[in-house]
Image (cartoon, rainbow, N blue to C red; front, side, top):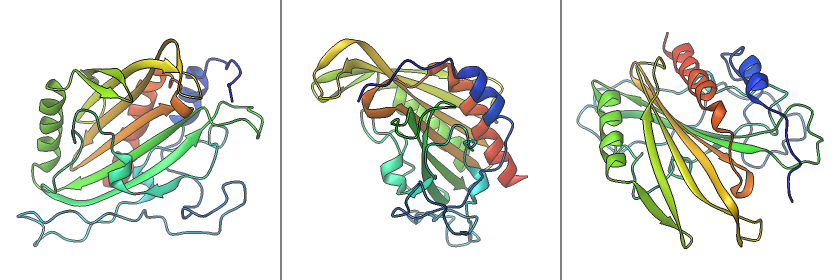
Length: 248
């Protein structure tokens, strides 16, 4: 189903996302109908067990709250945010660039959100999705993770995907958290049936470190379409605010 042309969302997102620091709405399980009201749920997200590390035996239990995740305000939220497995949320390019390997990780959790443009009819498909992962680290683990990600991306300039080549471009994001990175993936455009189409599409991965936590947000257009690259700064700032509201 082709999407009609959309209005510029940068101003609308900037006014909405950055005005809210805590994730609103109840957390539902994977079987909840997003069109119905969900019953109240705990304000934490199920965490994935991390592989053992040298420091994990003495670390206290860490729970990642919903407030650590990017908020989508009501007018942009297509459905209720859903918990998902960390392994499914993390993007995979040439290899496992965004995996932690269990190094100094005390907790990890992931959420998926679909978003729309304000005023979209209910029958419209979503505009895109955010797959977000939050990791908690001990010691120097958060900074070490960013260094490993950068080193892996330096070796991954492109990778094959369903017979096409996806190019990878990474760049630092200034004034976002303690450290931040933006990765842009560009691939040949395809139609809904998978046949080649004119032009290219993009998706973006934002990685933000703040204190002892790191978040990875993968912004993708719906069913292979492009995300809106102009939203990268807004997503990064909202991700940093989520980490800050949790750790302050």
